[in-house]
Image 1 (tube, rainbow, N blue to C red):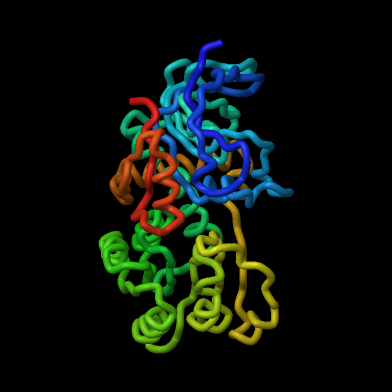
Image 2 (image 1 turned 180 degrees about the vertical axis):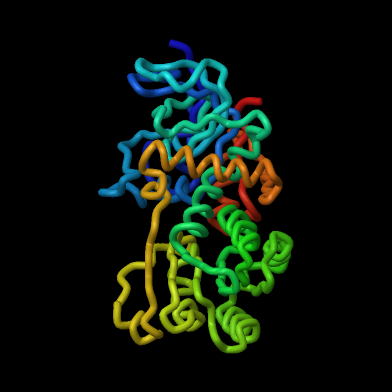
Length: 333
């Protein structure tokens, strides 16, 4: 059988577990499509998978050995039975389907979306997953109204860069934090009204000054336990705490009385998968995102493009918070 390159893990652990192997090119089954990968996105989901965070009852659980990568862009290479919406050579993008750290990946047709010719494959791999995440956070979960104020952690990250621009167009007042002045500058360029280093006291002081002591209506938290105590202090009474990521580790158990004692706060832990659970939802949200890109209302570029053989460096940069913006892997061009 014909062979391809694939970054795999045979056991959970650090970047030393990443192995670039030669494996057989998979064959698409009924309802599946074989995609020739151009670029693959590098996400914290891949780091969590490598560490074993999804090894239990998670909807993203998979048996070892496995090929990493949860999103990619490329071309339709082959079609399984009963796939009618795609043709050979179509330019496509997908997320939440494992196996994109490889020359080819089998993707359920239900998770695959046609990419307009005006959108480059590089952009699609850079901004699709995070763009869809930012879209549901901005339009579904947050329920922000013009004039409201929010705080966005990890302000230079892929989700935050999309989210800042989406909310800015809706007249939302935005505070963003990051762990370096360079990253704060990137958040400011994206449209944040106020930026802060993510030191707890700096955040408290920035929020107090910008909101005149009122606090923020909504917090977008992708950090987790490192800033949890700070988060409870910066929200308004009856504010909304949106916890959509945990870059500093699992948040663990939350005492509901802490939310009550901090001002009757609302807490939610949403996932993208539940906001694109049907084919119609996925296509509609994708088209809205594509429109934002093609009209220039959102501009996103990859900050670093790694070769597939450098995947270990890409993971290390992400989990040590050296990455600025979104990194992608170049597979085939």
